[in-house]
Length: 405
Image (spheres, rainbow, N blue to C red):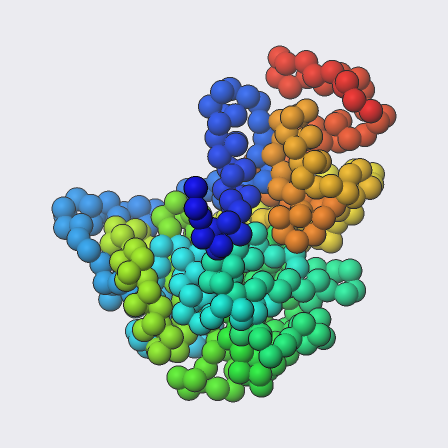
C-alpha cells in the first residue's frame, strides 16, 4: 500500500488508544482502574443539557456557519471579556469541533513545510504529530533546571530563522505545572520582538488550585492591531466536563480567523449546531459546576500526592493545576512504555507512559476519577513494584500472585 510521507510519519494518539484499551477491558469485566484518563467524571452543566434539549425538541437542527453561530460567538466574546479582560469582535473568533481542531486549523493556516514550532517539554502528546501533519518540524524544549517550568532562555536557545510559532500550554498537560507570570510576560514579549505566532493552549486555565495565579497573556501584549500573532485556544471539554460535546474555539486577529474558517469549511464545515447550543448554555449559565469540579479535583490531588509521597522511590513535583501528576518512576524502570504495559498486565492499572509526553522514566497519573480508584490504583502499583510486598493480592475475588522479581 502506498502512503504519503506525512501519513507514514504520524503515530496513533497514545491517549485515545489508552481509552480504547480501557473500554475493551471494562466490557470484558476486567477489574481495571484508569489512572491515565483525561476526562472529568462529573456531569455536564444542567444549563448545557437544557439548552441542547430545547433546540433538539424544536426539530430545527440545520447547518451552522463555518466559523460558529452568532450566539456561539457572543458566548466566546463574553468568556474572553470575563476571563481575559479583553474585548474582541466576532471577526476575531472561530468555533471548532473541539480545542484540538481549533489548534490544528491554526497550525494549518500559519505553517509551511520545514517551519519549526517550539513547545516546552513535557508536552501534550498531539503537538508533535499536529505539527508534522503540516509538514513542519516540532522542536521540543526541555527545561535545563530539571523542573517542568521553562525559562525564556530555554526557548531562546532553540530559536532559529525557521521558527514560526511557539505553543504554550499552562496549566500543563501532563505535569500540572502553571507557568509563572514572569515567563508568560517574557514569552509574549519575545514572540512580538521576533514576529512569531504565540499559541496559548488554555484549555485547563480554570482548573488551578490553592492561591495559584493564572497569568493573563493579554496583560503583556503591546500590539493589539490586526498584525498581532497571539492565538488563544480554549473550549468546554475540561472545565465544564463536556469532553464528548467537542466544542472549542480560537481567538486571534481577524485575518487569521478568516483563513482558519476557509480551511475548516473544506474540512468539516461548521460544528454541530446542537453542540454549540450546549456550549452556549454552559458558558452563559450558572458557573457553580466549574467551581465544584475544581474543588473536587483539588481534593483528589491532595489524596494522590499523599499516596505518592508514601511510595518510596517515586519523585513528584506537585501539580498546581489540571488533573494530572507527572511522576518519576525511573528508579523502578527507565522505560516508561515497558513499565506502563507491565502495570496493565499484572495489576490492571492504566497509566500513560512519559515518553509520549517527551520525557522517559515518567508516568502520567490522572486524578479526575474517584478517590477510591486513586487509592486502590496506587496500592496496586505499589504491590506490583515493591519487592517487599506480600506475595498475594486480592482484587475483588480474584487472587493475584507475584511471579516476578
